[in-house]
Amino acid sequence: MVAAYDKFDSVGIMDSFFPEASFFTEMELFERHCSKLKGTGSQVDMVSVCTPNYLHDAHIRYGLRAGADVICEKPLVLNPWNIDALAEVEKETGHRVNNILQLRLHDSIKALKKRIDEGPEDKIYDVDLTYITSRGNWYYTSWKGDIRKSGGVATNIGVHFYDMLTWIFGPVKENIVHVKSHDRVAGYLGLERARVRYFLSINGDNLPPNAVEGEKRTYRSIRIEGDEFEFSQGFTELHLESYKHALAGNGFGLDEVRQCIGIVHEIRHAEAVGLKGDYHPLAKLPLVKHPFGWDS
Image (cartoon, rainbow, N blue to C red; front, side, top):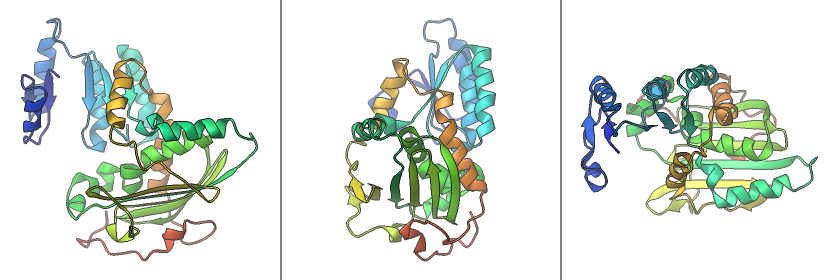
C-alpha cells in the first residue's frame, strides 16, 4: 500500500503492515499525492474503496480516472443506474471495477450452487433466509443509520445474501416487502428457481438463545426445503480471498452486481404490505421504537 485516505485518523494499525505508506485525512491532498506518483514506478495500480456507501460511486470514479483498477466493498452503489454510468467510465478509462461478493467464494455455498445446478431443472425450491447481527445504538448515530447514506438495513447487511441467492437460484421475478423499519426488513423474493422468505435484523432482541458466535451476537440460517443449510463457518478469510481473486484479475465485474443492487433498491422504495401472503415466521416479532425517536 502506497497511500491511504480516511477522515478518521486513528489508523495506527497501518504500522503493522504498511508503516511507510503516506496517509491523508483530506481527499484533495490524497488526490494530489497520487497524481504526483504517476510515472515514478510507485504509481497507484489499484484503489480499494472502503468508504461509506453513498460515497462509493464518487470514489470508484476517482480511482478509474486516476488510472487504476478499483476494488469496492459492498454495496457497489445505491442505485441501479449508477452501474450503467460506471460502465461508461470503464470504457472511457480502460480500467475495471471489481466487486466484493464474498459469499460466492464460500466453499459450502459453491457446493450448494453445484448441487442446485445439477438437480432437476424444473424444481422450485422453498428457502428461508434469516440473518440477525446485533448492532448497538452507535449504529443510528453513524452514517449507517441514515438511509440516504447507507441504503437501510437490507442494503447494509443483506446485499451480499441477495447476490448469493440470485447467483444460485436465478434472477428475481417478484419482490414483496412485508415488514420494514429502522432495525429490520422481512419479505419475499420469487426467484427463477426458488421461493425465498427472508428476515434481516440488527436488533439483538431478535436473536435466538444459541446465536452467539465468538464475541459477536450473530445468527445466520438458510433452510432449503425445510432442511438447515450449514454455512456458519468459513467467513473469516473470505475478504482476503476476495482481494486475492481481484488482484489476480478474476474479480466480479459490474454486470455481476446488477441483480442484488436492483433488489435492495426496490426494497428501499417499496411500501411494506404487512403480514399478508407467504411471509417469514420472524416477521411477526413486535416492532420497536427507534432508540433516538426519529425515523431512519
